[in-house]
Every structure is written in structure tokens, then in C-alpha cells.
Length: 294
Length: 339
Image (cartoon, rainbow over all chains, first blue to last red; front, side):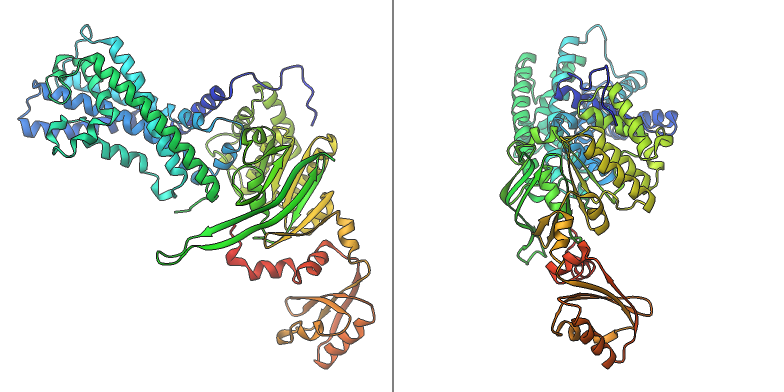
């Protein structure tokens, strides 16, 4: 094989960007690999709507279908945006299991000269996009059929977009942390991302204010950045409705942004440290390319 | 001499967890390995399954940390300068069907080429050229899930060569390939190294012919230790003063090899039971020792069906060093061979 060519052999693209871009491309190829695009679209719509429907039915029975009450918007939006928690965290952490156990490519990806954390974050992009579609559909359904009141002119768009951006980054870092843990775990732990997302559902004020929890459990919610992110997203969309609930009513938007940024920074440092430690342990124990076959 | 690979007293111990009440057991996969592979060399690691070949490759490719000693690849420490090592290497493991099944052959290879920073045009040019070499060019747009294990293996071999690494590691590359494909791969491997004196290739195999045919030098490894390291010719030269016979006899059954090994002038005996007869591989100090072997067979009422004097092979070198054939070692250590 001759290597002579008039074009440059190597690109000047930074390693970090290259790793992220290629992983995002791969993730999209995997996630969108449905034989029938129509079925893919139906699945992406029906799954989140079914999940929301369960909640709406329960709410309807308990409140005798009082969809005008402020708590409905609180619950419905919290539940809708919580879709991101499962999608982004699982999308990133699942890539470890998928590459190692299913495609058996982890060792080849890992020993390539890429930035592996950036690769994992890139693998989560497809799930983020699918999650965004689901969130949008869920909210649209609420507005059209359940009298969910979102006045587009009243929406605090800068706050919404900023919160969404920081929140997704924060969830990605949580996904990276879980990905590190999965480097040390066997195939049967594939659902770790969803399990953690499920557990956090109770502690982040997604569907009820933290005051509903026993007092000794509330601190769990207060140290989780997801709690502040959901509150900010709700406030940016429905303003005073969200502020009517006791958990974070005493805080201004700016204070909440500050707390979210600080906790996101802490989470990011924690994620990188835990990931690097787990990666080192996986190399020490020879787990990078071990197919567990569970 | 400039070394592409160097190891000093390299060791690796695996801790195997037993039951909840059992203490973890230790499995020594590598012990005190000292190797130097020169730049431009095609170097072979020859040993039975479970000998430590894959463990050594995993350490050299930064997938696994050693528990003792040090190793350098392309001049960089594999534990401290991981990024520098990874920019200069690639690896292919045989006998596995890795790859993103939903991507086509071209997409799989293109993505990995991009991981190494190759431009898209250069990646596509190399993909076409290499697929032609391995006879996979007509499947370039086939989803890799639709390929047989052997064809997937060919795709992975292309993936390894695609980035034109300074040091390429091939772990049993011809496993699961048919005879013709194995021959083509061996020929390409040799040509690839010969084309550019800066390219180095480390190959593990348990096929004697592969090591003998391809490698400039071979290290024979068993139970994690390097027993000998030299050119195939020099390794075989160790046995030049010995004489080697291959003897087909009526089934030995319970007679075994012990009566022959006790005979004066008999250095090593390997027994391979076949369908309806037995094969004895004899390493003798002198031709004279053959008469006592024949006498022992006759007294045990065994008949000689065929007798052939032959030149030593690497298999004989292995038997001489270990005391058993590679086949016997693999059978004896089958449960431990997973590392």
C-alpha cells in the first residue's frame, strides 16, 4: 500500500472535538437505526406520552381533574423535563456497556488516540436529541389537551435556554460519573443509569415539592443540582406558578442560577475524579475488554 | 539498536475472586519478562493458550496495567505516557467478531480512521486499497452484521493496518480464518513490514508454521515466562545435535511414554493418539537410541507402521524447552487458559 497523496493525511481538528463529533455521529447511527422511521417516530412520541398519561390519570383521580390548579403545571413540567435525566445520563453511561458487551469494540475505541470522556459525552448527544423531541411533544400535548398554560410571550427565554444548557451539561457529567462506575461493573448492571434516574425522581422535586418528603430525606434533594435545574426551567416557563411552592420559593432566579452553577461545578469535578479513578481501577484489574456475558 | 518495544522484569498477577468466604486466588499471567524488539522487526510470541501472550499485548497496548516491572513502546512508558503510546500503535485480536454491526464495512473503518485523525479522503483511499488486499472490496457497503465471522475478522485486520501505526500488535490474527485467507494475511503482514523499515509488528500465535514462516525473531512463552528468544533458525539450531523421529505405531493405550523416556539417549517423547494408531515424536541424542525404542515397542507387542527422520521444527524446540507439546499444555491447563 502506498501512502503518497497530494492531500493532507491528518486533520488539524483538536482531539477533544474529534472524539465528541465522531461519537455523536456513531450514537445517532445507533439510536436512529430503526428499520422503519415511522415506527421510530411513533415510539419517540408514545413512550413519553404514556409516561405522562400515568401521572395525569393519577392526578386526575386525586384532584377530581382540577387541571387549573398551579400544582398541575408544577407536576407536568417537572415530569416532562425529567425525561432529560434518564435520556442523557443513560445515553452516556450505556455506551460503555454497549461497546464492551454488545459490539466488543471498547478496547479498540479505548486504545485509539481519542479523549475517551469526550467520546462518551458525544455518545449521549443522540439520546439528548431524542429526549428533546419527547420533552417537546409532552409539553405540546399538555398545552393542547390538558389546559397547561404556557404563554410564549411571558416565557423568560434567556433564563430557559441558559438553564437548559447548564442542566444538560450537569446531567452529562452525572452520566460520565456513572460511565466510570460501569467500567468496573458487569453487563447485568446495564440499567444503572435508569435506576439512578428513577431513584432521583423522588428527591429532586420533579413531581412534588420536597416538603412532601420526611424531613430527614429532604437534604438529599437540596444537594442535588437537578432540583434547582427543574425549578429554574419551571420558573422560566410558568413563572409565579412554580414560585408558589414552598421548597425554593424564598430564592430569586439569580440565587437559583448561582446554586445550580456551583453544584454543577462540584458535580463536574466529582465526575471527572470518579471517572478517572474508575478508569484506572479498570486498567489495573484488566476489565477494559472483559466481556462478562451476563 | 533502536527498540520499538522493550520490557524489563514485566509481571502481571490476576486476583481471581472465589466464593464469598474464599480468599482471592492469585494467577501469575506474566513473570519477569525481559524483551527487546527492534524497530522494523516482525517479532513473534509463540506459546499455548493461557501462556500470557494476550496479557503481554494488553499491557503493551495500554489496556492493562502491569503489577511489576516496566514496558516501553515506541520509546514511551506504557503506564506513564499512555497518550503518546496510543498515537503510535494499533491492535487486532483474532477470533472475535467486533464491530458496529449496523454500520457498513466502510463506515466502521472510516470511523476508526477518523479516531486516529486521518483525513476523510485519505481514510477512504486506504480503506479501498486495503479491502482489496484482503479480498473484501466487494463488501465495502455491506453492513458488518451481515458478514461472517471470518469476513469480520478481515475487516478488523484492515482496521489495524489502516492507520499505518509505528507498532502494530496482532493477537492471533489468523484465528477463525480459512486456510487461503490465513495465507493471504500472512503474506500481507510480511510485505507490510518489509515495505517500511520503521514499521514494527508484534504477533502472537500458537501456530508454529505462522511463527516460523513470518517472524524475524520468536519468543517462546509458557506459564507467563519467556523460555527462549531468537530467530527461528537459531532456535531450531539448539536441536541440531539431536535427531528427531516421527513414528507411527499401533495404539499405545496404557503403555504411555514413560518406558521410552527412561531409555538412555532419549531426551523427549510426545505421544499423540490418532484414530487407530499412535504417533510418537522422539527427540534423541543419537541415532543409536532408536534401537532401544524399537525394542521396547516390540516387547510391548506394538507394531511400527511408519518411521520418518525429520528436521527440527519450532514445535520440537517447544517440547525441548517445556517437556510437553503445546497441545498437551493446552489440554492440561484448559480451565486456566482464559487469561
